[in-house]
Image 1 (cartoon, rainbow, N blue to C red):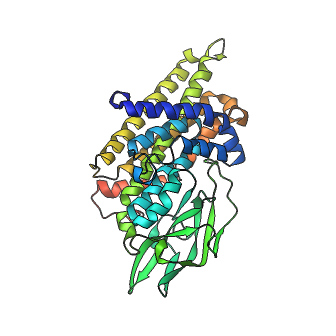
Image 2: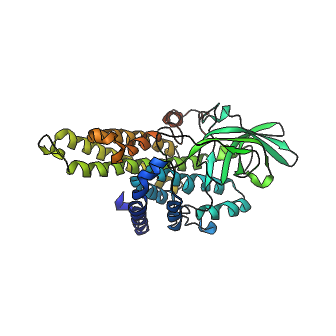
Length: 385
């Protein structure tokens, strides 16, 4: 889509590309190996304005579009899909959730610190009994005078080292049940983060179970309407899905570029490897698939930015792009032979990160269900949040 980029977007891509090559790439293997993102890298990304890129200027950000955010995420994912995944949550999902549901005081309290990278936020919804299906969630909020008490547990909470958690829970008001959002601070009595899980991919963003035992939720920490927040949250989810699809495009592109360089520099069976027809054909097919994914992604983000998105294009992107990106990485890994499965080359982390994206931020099957409901003009399935 380079023909339709604005001059500002070209400059943004150049900045993100330079940051990825100079600051992210040298740390990518360490991030994967140690399952942790160095604070210095977070600080550098914040200094360049990436954490606040999609936050309005009134709250210390740049007020950029979803397309702009995805362009940055794609570039950074070429070096480290894992770090790009962390950034996607902080750039789009968490701040836009606050923007959509928060009151002026909450926005002022949370967003400037998020834009500066000072306050990392976590988004917590998945539960043991219901996965992403909110109809079976058990985390509940009950009234306690003018406040509430939160009890329950969540699984796979991304960015478990965050300072602030945006937590979905079942609610009850005047005998009516709903599903709403509350803000939980890390230091709240009764809040516990369990030891982090070791993961196949996306290892630079720690993930683990969290639990709530009689946590006091005061009115200033209720985010939006307790009964109806989930019914108006769909556009934020769709934007987040596209952000994660952008990291998958970057993941496949990054692995493609490294594989292309490897193939061009290697001889096999007495000839340059790239002249062997299976190799050149594999590369051509992967190139075509990545271009198709990129075209779909930025068509969808343009619709979103223009306010013209009528279908769940975020789920379309998450379903198609993440699956296709994994297919590309699987093919590219084959071209490395034995070297591809060795950690020393650093290439298999792309494969692992791409595979993780088929589950993270909603498994492929969930997104397929959402798209099929739209295609068949059915009532949205309960899987939709």
